[in-house]
Amino acid sequence: MTAAVAATAKTPARVRLRPTMQSDLDYVLSLEQDPANLPFITPWERTQHEAAIRFPDFRHFIIEAGAGLDAAGFVILIGCRSPNQSLELKRMVVQEKGLGRGRAALRVVKKIVFDDLGAHRFWLDVKERNARAQGLYQGEGFALEGRLRDAVRVADGRDSLIVMSMLAPEFAARRAQGLEMFA
Ligand SMILES: CC(C)(COP(=O)(O)OP(=O)(O)OC[C@H]1O[C@@H](n2cnc3c(N)ncnc32)[C@H](O)[C@@H]1OP(=O)(O)O)[C@@H](O)C(=O)NCCC(=O)NCCS
Image 1 (cartoon, protein in one colour):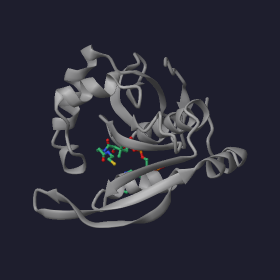
Image 2 (cartoon, helix red, strand yellow):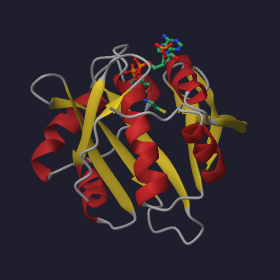
Image 3 (cartoon, rainbow, N blue to C red):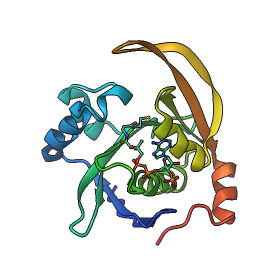
């Protein structure tokens, strides 16, 4: 899929998504290893990313932003062939934080997930200590489903995972309210 959708967010960020290529993986791996991101994700081996690029059940995207549409982050979706139409936002990492790019990218991702991939349910889990990501997901309409207590090990012990989701009718309602706007 060559999803090249421009989005405007609450803040004036504009982003575009394109499929990740093999040649992008050094960039992806470096973002995962960045100390700014490591506390919030579980980094993958290169082979896992290579598989995610190839397997039809996965979508792996590079976020592009800025005047030169440089690589600005990445997104991984899982469950794209799910018979249950239940897709997972496996990972989203934005390089320069706080510029509205995460929100803009998530809008594009939701459009792909519900419009192109036919999802009924779009869900994710996020570490409890990741207040920034939770703020983004909540602000973008994801409902709180629950808390998986002590589900992950972290540098200083354990953390819980917060499960959040959005259903297709909720996405449609947000769109009708003008909350899923694109440029
Ligand atoms: C989480 C992440 C993708 C968000 O992208 P971003 O570009 O930094 O976020 P945005 O600038 O679009 O901000 C979106 C919203 O997040 C929330 N937010 C941002 N910073 C926050 C903070 N420090 N505390 C709480 N909420 C915060 C706000 O609701 C904000 O919206 P607002 O500025 O309109 O109020 C990005 O910060 C990132 O890559 N973090 C490290 C990896 C990670 O945590 N990935 C998610 C794993 S589930």
